[in-house]
Image 1 (tube, rainbow, N blue to C red):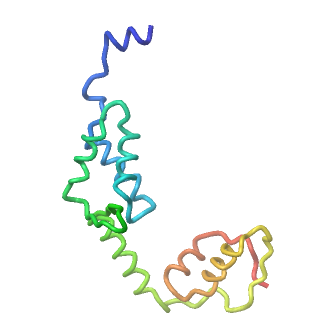
Image 2: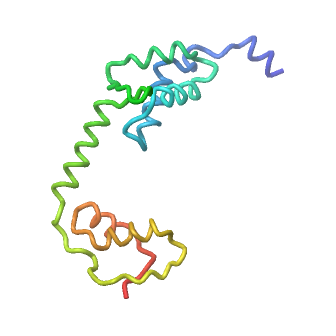
Length: 150
């Protein structure tokens, strides 16, 4: 029955995903956590989003957008955007202007009571507790700390 309904009432063009929509999704998704991504990752995410509505050639053409900054390194095409670079510059400026503006939360030795933290996690906690910059101070003052200073 569902197949008959689909054949009789095909999906309208307004609900189809265009190659532009698919690449817009890929850009939002990929640059949430990374500043550089490969062409393959952008294509993969766009094709997953537009499955059934877009094809590889359509999505590949979207990689020609003016918004992309491209560079080939070791045989891989890496992509970023001007918007991503501008955000990174703002973050770097924020960190640099905040250096040395705060007293550390503690200069004392820190005794961890949570024994399940990894060595890397312990180092991160110590870094924040001893930080004199905007970033460490902001993180420590806004996040609950499960350990206590002795």
